[in-house]
Image (cartoon, rainbow over all chains, first blue to last red; front, side):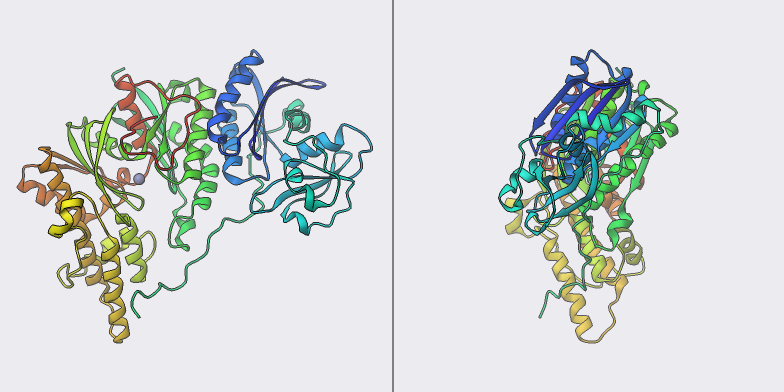
Length: 222
Length: 347
Ligand SMILES: [Zn+2]
């Protein structure tokens, strides 16, 4: 079964076509790092990976999308695109935690990597983070200042960990840096295989909107 | 294509709108509004609006298709507001449009929100006589445009130099203890008041201002004048005559809007004035424009209130004009442009 995989929760714009059978194989993948161009680049990337995989949208059996957490504006681009595609093609949409995909790549594939902190950039000097061991999430997801975290981990991975390597106080590994399509596809694969019902793609915002209720009108005269 | 079937998506502010038109005929106008979520903040909160657009997109699409009795595979094109508007909000609509376009293999047109406010009138009154002058007034914009050809050529004549007209309504409503958005409650309160009770200023109408700002608007001074007047009353321990303040404020806004719009028509030798945007739903604006235009033999076209506020039908209506005129669709990497200039009808 062919699956379209999307993630826009980090500065990377990821689109891929994966084949899900007993195994999961990524047939075509585009990763473009540009924090300001999610809205522009995602659709052409989808078009490109479909073409590269020799597929057209009606060939797809499901859409898998990274639910974040991530900076809101970019994150929504991936989710609304995934929802529109799945809805029109009448195929299910499945959500996967973006940190989970990184955690899968960092600890799920290789045994005994120890506990790993996965962190992506949350802007405002904060990171979105979670802790994984053997592919399982032990803590998070949450958003915090990197210096304020006291975690018992062997290493840290992800774009947010690289950015704040100096304050995290643990060894930071270069890879994986951005959520890999293989991880997103692997974590959704059981649902794809059993044709689980479609899911509403609800972003993991972790933060409330910035908005304050106004007080009484300010006097213009004194 | 004479009567293209076009679906339009609008998410530039707080309404998630999906409309479907066939040529000049409206088939569906589904709107989900997040206005209630913004009310306690006294204005639209961009992040709240963007979150609501994401939630509302698919259900609103289902409603529009079902109301029109068509499938997405039937449409000739998908149009979407690409700007101007709130950046994060626009992005949800543009991304959705691309998703739908990819899935259904349809061309997509990224269009200008303001030009769409003009185009929507064709759904009510048929083809627009061109050239026409358009007055667009809402919480986000106050502009006068010269429309030579809706599918290609829109020229800005003037716009507000400070607050949008609708913003002034919201702020004055708050001063008077009326709910957000301020347009409808002020319109209602004004019916009980005397528009001549208080002489509020008319921005940019003095001779010295007209030289540089003949077709521009300013509502900030008016808003401050209303605040001063209300505060003076309150300080004196006197009750505030809400009806009179609302009526006099509304009269000042409508006086300037209609005077400048009709001046623009006469200066450009144009005999059709189109009014759009949320403030076009104001009953006094509609009445005063029609009354004054009659004196100069100018025809005023204002669509019904539901079409004046932001919706997807207006985007579809403009999309239909573009398809009918043979304009090329946008590329798949079309950006959302929160500051899209008026001269850009489509991207
Ligand atoms: Zn508008």
